[in-house]
Amino acid sequence: MSFQNKTVFITGASRGIGKAIALRLAKEGANIVIAAKSTEENPKLGGTIFSAAQEIESSGGKALAVQTDIRFEEQIQSAVQQAVEKFGGIDIVINNASAIQLTGTEQTEVKRFDLMHSINIRGTFLVVKNCLPYLKKGNNAHILTLSPPVNLDPKWLGPHVAYTITKYSMSMMAMGWAKEFSKDKIASNALWPCTTIDTAAVRNLLGGEALANMSRTVDVLADAAYFILSKPSEDCTGNTFLDEEVFAEEGITDLSQYSVVPGAKLFRDLFV
Image (tube, rainbow, N blue to C red):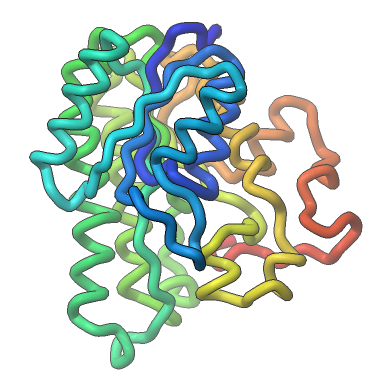
């Protein structure tokens, strides 16, 4: 399935995994809508919607940068409208924006609990709801949500229940949409890495450079997303993919090229 002239709406694409997926699909000819908050660079995080758009256009792709905080439906509606005005429609939605805090119940402040719920669950739902009229008209329409397989073993829930339930909710929405939108031939899948990924969250919140050096690069998820979104929407829907499974289906088992430090022992992801 060609990405030529398809329009991809990606939340949180100013940096990290979202930007990597944007660059990968732009390379294949897709139009990229960068719907994210950052308009001024945070030294700890790096990247803005404008720098991401510039990178895409410098590599020969087409991009639209729209400042969007997905907690506010009017901002989502404005971003969707601008995307449709510039590119004529929306064929793919990638739910990448997410808030994280890996704390136990006592240590989780109400404002952080509310933030994770308003971005991870409510924001993701509202993005899909507002893109849906265009996805129904889209060419090989796909929804891809960055969230883990749902596993109710208490060991996954116990350490950081507030964050975990929001990510599981994203996956449950992805599964629900696969069923709900099957008549419209819109695919809906979730994707999650088997190892930690070298992102600002890993470097700043989880384990610093030591953990980053035991991780894979963002390109592993960009390539996995490419494989999923290349498939016919009727044939590839209702899955909670792990990246290694996606590569295995393509006959690729050697993922050493994605290691931040060649040959380093990799750290398994929190949910795997």
